[in-house]
Image (cartoon, rainbow, N blue to C red; front, top):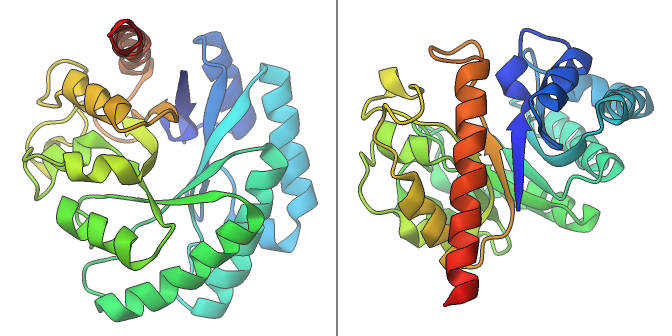
Length: 265
């Protein structure tokens, strides 16, 4: 059982300082953001000088005693050639950090479905050749915000996996309706509480509507054994250490309870 911390919890800090904060809060693993023009590593710079970025990441993580649970990435490019080059570097970065899975940005709903498959198919092949799981996020306001669409996407691209953030299943169009059909496809997870509208997609823990216990139980029943990454983004309302720590404590407790209940049954 691994409760990780997303580096998106500390986008206003350098990666070095973010790692230091996570270690101080008791985390042992980090979900590393690789998002162009945001945090913490630039896909463009990875493609230009991978070794320098690997060295920087490894040094920061080693100094804090952290290991990589996953990458949270987007190539940040609209043209196929640039995205292909940057995504290959992202996969190599994942391997260098021993991150087993890449959470990747979901396609926008305005893009034709067949064009979406043509775009993501080669990315999946690149990830598979690198030995890394590609888990596109079932994100609100994208083509994959509804469970049936996310499941179909994975069925149409054999081997494609999902990153599940339950808050999107309540704050987005799905509005808390059952989404257990997604569980067999999940290879990574993000965790925060939310309200029932996108304007309240991140609220204090236990002040929202996310049924954490039910989702954790459902994931475990379908064989999920991946990481549970706390993702209270610092630039969103209700970001900050208080909710990060509260979410961490609750995940530590709930995941152990779920594991114990299944081991005793």
